[in-house]
Length: 392
Image (tube, rainbow, N blue to C red):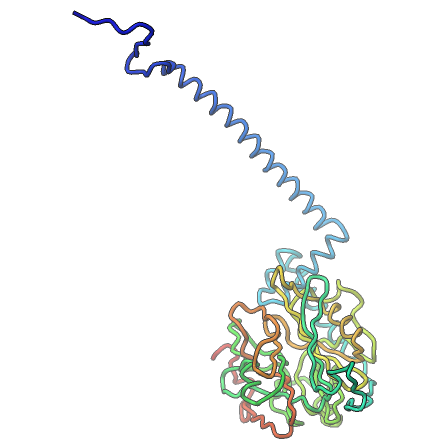
């Protein structure tokens, strides 16, 4: 005998729990929800896509068709030109424009070194003017931080220019880190100086560019057939020299320490760069200057580090040095070579090289007793043409 189900209890059909709608009805509900989600996601995707496309069109129009976009585009290209990936700038301004831009800067830098410098120095400050309100008045070196539009850096002031010596690497076939130079020689401060040949961008730092002069002697002459070259240095009286000179002129002027680099950006108290657009892009910088009282100024700007410091143009560096009383100033090797080291051998700034501090051929170092410093000529007996700057 078949028993009947209890009253008021629903009977399951085909294994379906009581109260659940049939399978066909469940599928239709799920399908409706999916169809509702798909149009929403598709509309959102199209909104994002077309908004991005519109932004790209507007940006391209501004970047390529407006005066402000043109200025930004060339500043970006100039910034790339100062790196080891110079050829990438062609994707922004074109290959022809890149070649023309590099040639324009080369010609402009030569012109900026032509005017003869007439500045004089009044002498090295003494301790006589020191007061309790000026605790640093008697110190040989001081370091202060500087800031500007998108950049951060440091200004090293050396009160006695005769305390500066150009130190060179101590190992054949390889440059030397400035931290090593400072520790090895007992210097109280050091910065990078001249540039070097780096054909494969491995940075062995052994083959300098142009001239290297230390303690009045020519350590390296890579001029070839050139009769003159742009130099940055100091004579035996402590006066800074910068600009275009022949070797004979330098010797007649009593040159003491010098490297080849350019451009000179301040001469006879006036800046040579008119605005930021002519400032050769944004990059890490090392610039040397001098005040009328003889103090040497080393300005080091960090760069290529978003969120900390992007870098500065040469115009920015020029203006900072003018504000600090510079009557002459010139560019030194910058980029990933830019480094400031204190007497403990500690790096003060933040070099931009991902590989760390670079190996360099030369550095301007500060000493309490520079006459006691021995700087052997590592290039003695070598012919520049036979030195491979790409090998360690």
